Image (cartoon, rainbow, N blue to C red; front, top):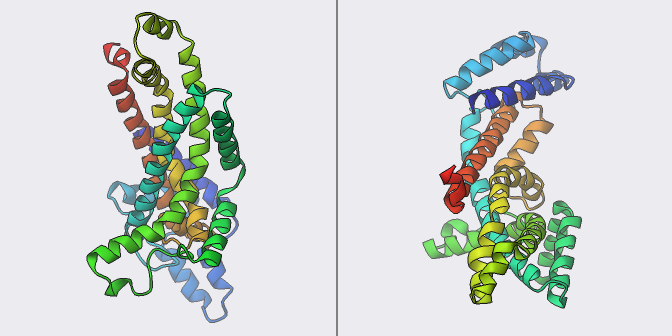
Length: 310
């Protein structure tokens, strides 16, 4: 994990530096900001040093869990990330539950009912989910919400949120969470349904499935206990990659849906060329990716006894 994080941080830092100018270059265009003030700020944040030295200073601070200072927000990077991480976690967790709770059963049904009208209907749904971009789907749902009044048009809570009871606050959060969850969960669900269908179809033709049927086991036991358990192994690996994927995919969804999350903060940081805030978000995404792979490996060892025996 340590060499991987070092490599990611090194490459990311130098790629960001390839962009012309920085946050202070934009401030220099403001006639109300003096050149002396810009020079002082550049020296304060170490931006007058060579790129490699800036990276070493940043890396030294990271080892002390100091993520630096945001130029645009005038706040510590860790404070900003912490304030937005909870919102993104809630959205990503609900989207992940929505995705996986529906993907696995739909994939199983599609494989068991191969070439039926139900299989074709699920396939059409999956292809539509893959074809429609997240931001366009979000705009369609917002238009539907505006016309029907069934759902709130963006945001994380209502105007009168503070005056609500505890139960009212919980329901208000859930109410605002429905549309972003559908948008973020649908894109991932489409691919997972097709993946589960293909995996299960391969195992339904395997010799051990034929043997299980020859022993007189019921079709339900053959499919759920033997075929699905083996077909789920590649899905568990994909689960590890879905954690950082949700973080990156949530950026546009949070922008369109006005959800105050980490993805929206990262996009704003890139546009404002807020170096240390961008690096903090990238490191957070890298840590999620590595932890996601670790969780996937542990789950594979738990599900598949052959891995433990090896």
